[in-house]
Image 1: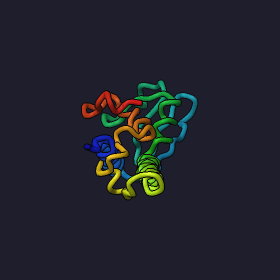
Image 2: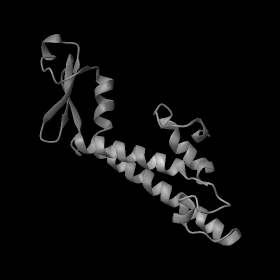
Image 3: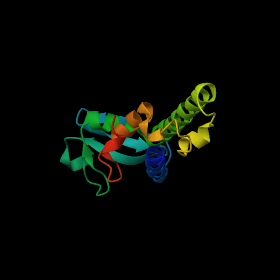
Image 4: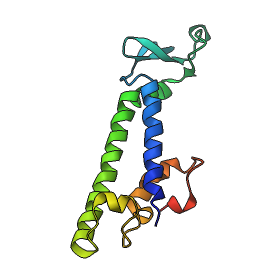
Length: 151
């Protein structure tokens, strides 16, 4: 039996972590200029995105215009938060397989978490674990996503 779903999830988390690392790893915040707009900053006051409706303020070629709500969302999902979420998801996967190993140890053929994740337990197919399928849902538009990964 293959264990494609855990590998798929880990690959997506690696991609997200790499993107967050390249974006700077830091926490972002946003400030209002006035009622016409503001800017999202990374630590060190490096501008990321300007927001508002004043075209005079949208002068930097490397910045995209956004409205206040978009800017708040961008700042809230900064690289630091993304890295924390990825670590939490990786721990969730580990907890799922530890739980599966506990069940297998009590009622099955006594495989450990690593063996179950690798697809070596004939009684537990990792690709059929509902919690993993739910973790895969946000990636249903990824080219490597397969229909059978869905819940």
